[in-house]
Amino acid sequence: MITMSFLPLFEWAGETTVGITISGSVWMFPVIQCLHLLALAILGGAVLVVDLRLLGLGLRHQPVSQLAHDTQPWLVGSLLVMLATGVLLLTSETLRVYYSPPFWWKMQFLLLAMLFTFTVRQKVARSDAARIPPLLGRLVAVVSLSLWFGVGFSGRWIAFY
Image 1 (cartoon, rainbow, N blue to C red):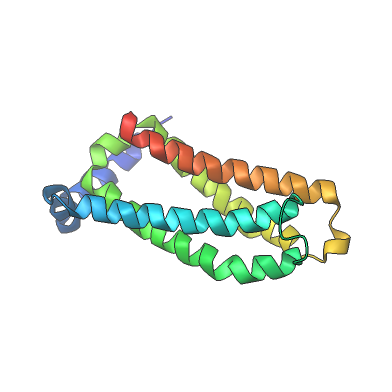
Image 2 (spheres, rainbow, N blue to C red; image 1 turned 180 degrees about the horizontal axis):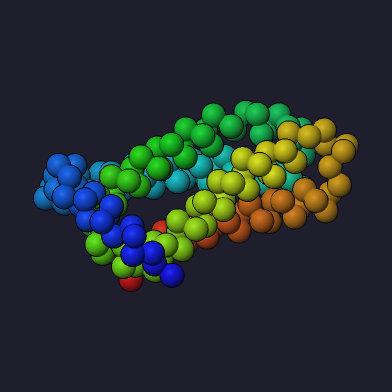
């Protein structure tokens, strides 16, 4: 499952000034982790608003396309913060993370969630509501929520493995 070709990259990342500084600091890791979790919460909110609307469970007076448009900056911004803080967190404990199966699960879920969100979900959410079969909207929402839940769940398990 783990490709050994990534090991030199992880070792290098842990030996950078950034990695050494974060791992040697008492407060930097928790502060970065708080920013990471705050970005996850914002991303979760942006995803949840649109997906609940696709499921028909909220904001029924709002067009899905308008909600998708309005939440897009929050989704993209929080994702960028999550990616940046995630890399910083990674540099502080590279070998532990490298050998952690939940980390690799998270990376797979993250890749799938991003691909799905910015292709299939975006196309469905930005379509005219009258042209979206309700079952398709619900299916897209369930897949989206499942993938993002997988990111959060596996990310949480990194600390315990």
